[in-house]
Length: 239
Image (cartoon, rainbow, N blue to C red):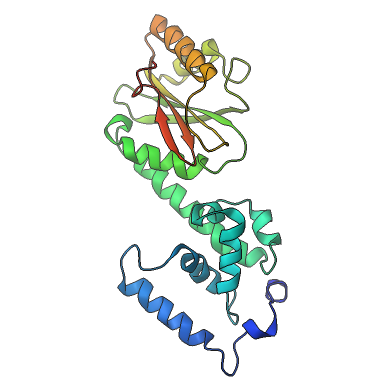
């Protein structure tokens, strides 16, 4: 069924005068023999689509996906249904793209779990960026750490603006005690793209930090993730 759904006009199919197979071979050679920049962003999408769409020139499709979702990361992190329903796509081709984001997220998460968080800060930022930068809703998470600063639990607290309705200081500290955590990191994303903290972000962080001090729970940081980068409230001197 997906093969039928993934059809494009005849001019894009393999046939006389249309060197689709030769183009694919050249793309594959560049991928294997080149470095990390061997393929342009649209060519990465094109190569992934080649695994699901066997007998069609998928370069035009790759370019329309980049145009619609804004970037390589935007395509790979797009809603699966939006990908599948994009003209020329289908479930198989959407899955070929989504599997990359899934694999990248799992690899990044494993790196975070295998070593102390504060000693592998960039690995944490990479993991959070992969997981949250392209969300269309504001999501609040708390990372609970043990005395060696190893991650023991990553909890999705809720969705929505970060205030006491979404994340209550006493509840966060109580949860830390229930888990036997000695420290925590607050994380949330800004769907607008800019990671700059709001007054509410700063105020709720300091309320949680104050509640933690009373019971020996350290708030190491509050990290805000956006498509334009990330901000650490600790690094900005706001905790």
